[in-house]
Length: 248
Ligand code: ADP
Ligand code: MG
Image (tube, rainbow, N blue to C red; front, top):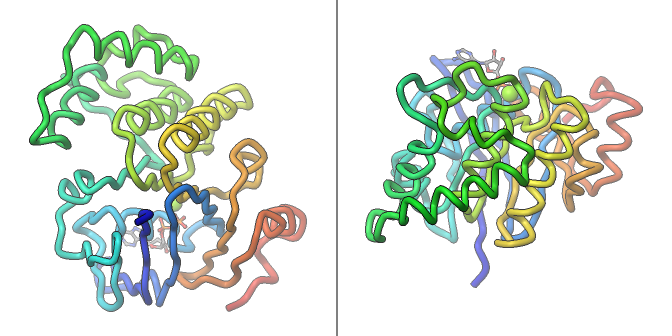
């Protein structure tokens, strides 16, 4: 059976304010699904809620992974079940090197498995970093501390490539990137997709990244509701006409 993530009539509140007002969407294995929408439309809220961040309260609806509700699961449990969230604003973690973080993330996720061999693992992450045009020295630095915007975003992609999720939720992986970094980030996303057939929810403001990571589906979110769904042509229309004219 192929993997499936379903969001059903999802209503979400933050501090008593309704942000998502009945969102429905399906992400299938191997699918690249772009979520676009203006600032404040609820894109990050959707990603965080799927990942189980406690700040976001589901007041109605459900989220199913392969037919089973994940609403009762903690963020860790969801990660173990194969979900991954790449943050819009990755935070620094002082005192933990990137290399340690990556290894720990694998160990925590794969409770039952043997921890990866350090030497082999170091070689693998170094090779991945090089593929993303990341300076391998970053692996020995504290996570995101003093990293540039581009390095932080690449780091999210690196973590994703190490964890090999079933479904990756990528919150604006393209924001703040120059064109070279954008290509590297896109290369990493395409690598995961090609090698594992992961389903990818690609949240973005701009059509630009979609030239490098072509989606099969495009969904437009505005004021907490889906106002339009379609194929890649929808992204082109948005780029030309903006979000203004779109209403639910
Ligand atoms: P997007 O990612 O599409 O820009 P968000 O999901 O970040 O949108 O935000 C959606 C709405 O939720 C916005 O109106 C924002 O102000 C509100 N919001 C987000 N986080 C919080 C918070 N911690 N407290 C109160 N409101 C919030
Ligand atoms: Mg956002």
